[in-house]
Image 1 (cartoon, each protein chain N blue to C red):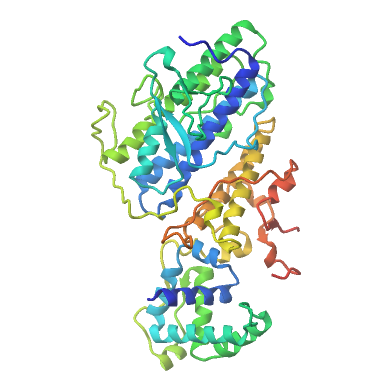
Image 2 (cartoon, rainbow over the protein chains, first blue to last red):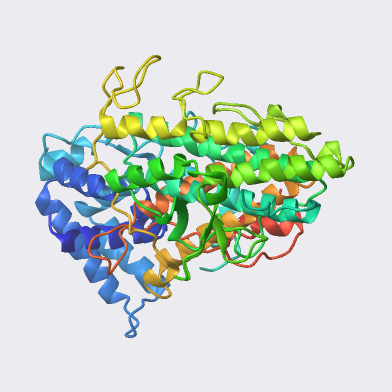
Amino acid sequence: MTVQSFDEFLLLSVDLTAFEQTDLLGTGLAHHYLAKARAACGDEVVTALLDAHRAARADAADGVGGHDRALLDRALRHRIFSDDRLGPVARNVIKLWYSGTWYGLPAEWTDCYGAQPAAETSTVTAASYQEGLLWPAIGANPPGAKAPGYGSWAQPPRIEDRYLKGTAK
Amino acid sequence: MTASTIDNRDDLISYLHSAMALEHATIPTYLTAYYSIHSSTNSDAAHIIRVVAVEEMLHLTLVANVLNAIGGTPDLTLPGFVPSYPAYLPDGEDDFTVDLRPFSPEAVETFCKIERPGKAPSAGARLVRTSDRGRPLLVSSPTAEGMRFYSIGEFYEEIIEGLEKVAAGDPGLFCGDPARQVGPEYFYSGGGEVITVCDLDSARRALRLIAAQGEGLDSGLYDADGELAHYYRFRQLQLGRYYQVGDHPDAPSGPPLSVSWDDVYQVKVSARLADYPVGSELAGAARKFNAEYGAFLALLTKAFNGRPTLLLDAVWYMFRLRDGFNRLVRNPLPGSGGLHAAPTFEIPTPVGSDPAAARTAGGTTRAVTR
């Protein structure tokens, strides 16, 4: 696993999850997740996913170091989500970040692209459930972990402004 | 014996403000080591540091009670209340550095120094002339310019003697509103308990508990409640074994404890905002932590000024700070040679005293309206 592919995996994850890189690294699990994706789908597939993502970003580049969000959205759908091989893997990476669980790919996928030994549904580490992005996304704590303090549940959830309806990032 | 540096209520109030800042100043140091430990590793060390950090919070509360009892106004939002790290504490004639460090032998060494207040060789040696190195010393005398205390223990002895002296001449010294006292119902998850202060006797007990939980001037392993003093808790990490009753200080004979110095995020020592890449997401996260910490100190200030029930909300704040702390230490700090980020505790100027403002001062997070 190279430093470069890790950085690319982070960029891909930012686009897939809509969480900032600081949040993703802040789970302490990014390296584990890349390793899990490789073990479950094979290096070749993950490399192809990162390549497709790099190409999608290039499609949407605005020429001054950023990218056009609408163009990026379209490029991601075109190059990744509508791809029979890469689409299911990308969706799995989203679920992995949000739930901390790797879900086994469907039989249709493994029939076509091969089954890896680590392909079945599994939790990545003991910490991955409580670090799931699902919880900050809904402004709640993972039940049974990360205690929020007695009575804090009486307060409305705290959601970052940029995720609220009517605010553009 | 040197003349007392405390002559009246105002002097006492100045000293107790300094004592609150001192008690608080150790907490970021302990928390940085605590949160640098990889989760689910080093459980012995994490537990020891956590207990001590929680008891420092008790000490802060005890000092606030004494300050309130004599009519003072605790304020954790004053500029300089949170020191700029590295800060310095006295160790007899010399001083030592208090850094924000990852869990390491150096950190434990510092903890031992913090918690072992040495007794001055004679009553006349309690005050020492401050060296002119311009270091921010945490136990300088607020009333005698250019002087600092031999140790934290001597600093508290000065306050206790000052209370006795001023109370003797002023029967109305303990004039504070009892409703401003924080009671034992607000402190849990640590040793000792909150003592409400209404007279000289309770003030002395509150301040002596602080000294006894550290190591105190009478240097026993265990305090009156049978609780191991902080100094010896940390010695266990150096010596690799737990103490049990009857042990000699140099030879704990309890079960071995295991320490894994490698299972730690190597955070940059006493990181500053200036170490973060300008305008980066990570710098934003570090600023946000500082703002939330500032909002937390503002909440504590309200709690210590007649609204002790706010300490229940403070628990939520602390859990959020925990999450913010974890997020930062898991992020590599670009340009630091592989070190990780950590909170800098550079607290921005408070944004106002409105509770709603304080609650959202942390940055972009806001409660969803229903």
